Length: 417
Image 1: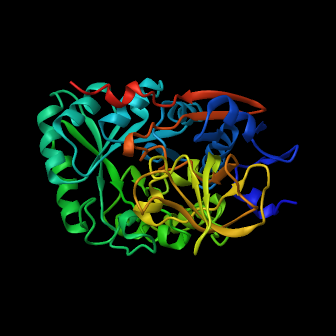
Image 2: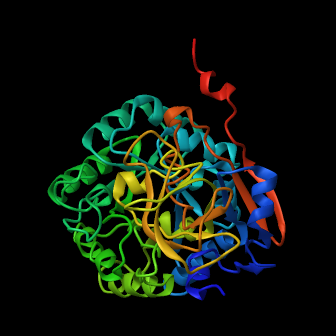
């Protein structure tokens, strides 16, 4: 008998089908047989539903709202295409994400370019392709833009402001504190705003801010409204993203409705009623819509029982990089069992996926599923130890389709000259 809380971590609609975990109407054992392991499985309808939920939550409370998918969370063309189809803007961080977004067929006018160290090439790419808003992170951005934007044009810009908020999250994903590498402190932001307003080729559409990522307190996110509102009246106020998700049984993130209500309540008293609000969810848009399926290769009993799988930090770097906790279950014995430590295949002691997770008598050949891998896993996938980056499969209504293929062995030497 499965623990219903285990299913609660998998994409909405996941169920037990013939004793086997099913996502998007597809049995995970059948997907593993067809596409191999490791494989990332995305419940396509879950992503679409989340996009609609975000748009509804904000537009019902503030009619002139937009939601931009933070592409860095999952910058694959199939995901960016899906987000664009659902009416979302795309937040792109760097030239590579512009390339994939354009390949996805997204309208560049509905993109926002971020980055604390934009190069000439990236700004030329953004301006040349018609990216709608460029988020100015520093004075050097202004120098480059004024040199690159042709006379007679006006490039829309937002000025990124450091809100001075110490976020309750991992230091690596905190972005709103005074020492952050991102954005300008309010005094410098005022100077940047005035400089853009005086420019003959730039247009200051508004301001941008971001507190951090994986925040489980909506009030911390809403605290960023006041620091940017104090800079004056603008057409656009972009409050970034950062809403956390439920990775573990203990996590209790706010719902999108609670997040939207908290943000808009704060905004109503501080910004012009006719202004446009933008939010930029990334992790909370896609994380819970995906899981990764591995095959157990080794079970080693000792002081600790190590269950080794055929993936690891090559396809999920969040554990090693941020200490993020995940949960897991066997695909055909969902829930229950004794605690084990799940480790990866890479030649690195830090290649540990989960420390202390209950699995029901794991054995070599079993399939293991780790939920909530739809954000920052694909993004940070790598070829450590010559590992082949894993495929991405969309599942929905019982059908599955490959949207990103697995690396081939030839891919490992394709860049050699």
